[in-house]
Length: 496
Ligand code: AHR
Image (cartoon, rainbow, N blue to C red; front, side):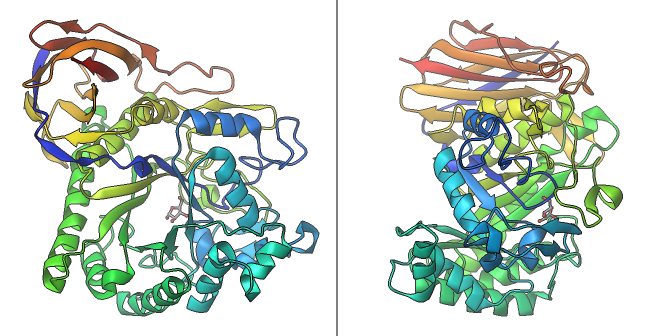
């Protein structure tokens, strides 16, 4: 057994953990919208056509923000196709996923969905094939009081009160050659500047998210981000980060991946801090990690080509227990970087690379659902910076990595601790040395563990991988727990 100690002090604070890091993503892609969240006529759907079982599961995940309508789909989407009487809406071709789009779910349906889910909407404008004016008129449709053209249209569609949508993405992955309307950075900056200016002129209270590069694997990484942040200045409140990770073939190596998530965040944050110093404005662009997940099996080829169908089964990744540990590591990294990461969206929410998987008779929760819920149910508070005493190992890709991954949140009279033993062979005794915090009892503690890293959930076996209560803490001078090899624990301590 290996040993690790986490030293904590209430004054070593990183920043407030923003609830919006527990966001998700709903794209018109495969069976995410149609037959995922929206299935009129199904016995499990409510009067609005929303699947009640899916809504319930998303509520359990505490989804705080929903990004919509894409993704790649957004770059060919014209929002006016998705409003008004459903029978009048056109059926269109979606070139991003080669699918047929009936537009029966659009802006009003999505914003109603967000209300039912009690989460904040985040709309992604089309800066691929759309115009800045089209983006601005969408803001008017959603946010302006009635009396002008698009606000009146909203009223005609049964929604007189403004929706007050605050979060707006200025396009999606515009650095990617796969993107409809993909452009070099200078051109993107021009488009985004024009769009953001008009959108903010229409409603100065909105916040915009500029497209960062599509991930650290891109040749555009850093230069694109730096240029966008520096040149958009105050017109971009956030810069987006995207990241999909895959299994390198070795579990120990897979569990080292969080080092590179930390490094991606810190690199883009450095760009933002440099720009802030250069502008001498004192304002800072924060990070919006608006697409992240594990995604490597159902990728490319047949998985991405809808062959002209309506709601084809695309990107239907089946997640393993190992993937759930990686999802926990993403969220722990966001918490450790609470001073810079303010929004994050798990991509996606239903069926498409998702924690929830449906058929017409019900759903099951994928392994990653449990990792997400264990952390999101302990949201709220200030992230603490800990000092770690722990053995390390050498990862091929990510250098020296400690066997323990962690995050801590201090919230009034509670301390929430997340611990992940990355060692795939040995258990770990972990001590919490909470210098000035008096840990009384662990009021709730649950573990996610499975002997088999490749274990999955399915309709036949929906609970093969799930979290269980595990309150094995010994509390004397320090709080101590023994964690099995490759396991993740989330605990809430009551403080004196
Ligand atoms: O989430 C799936 C796709 O991944 C999104 O549409 C796109 O933005 C990214 O490349």
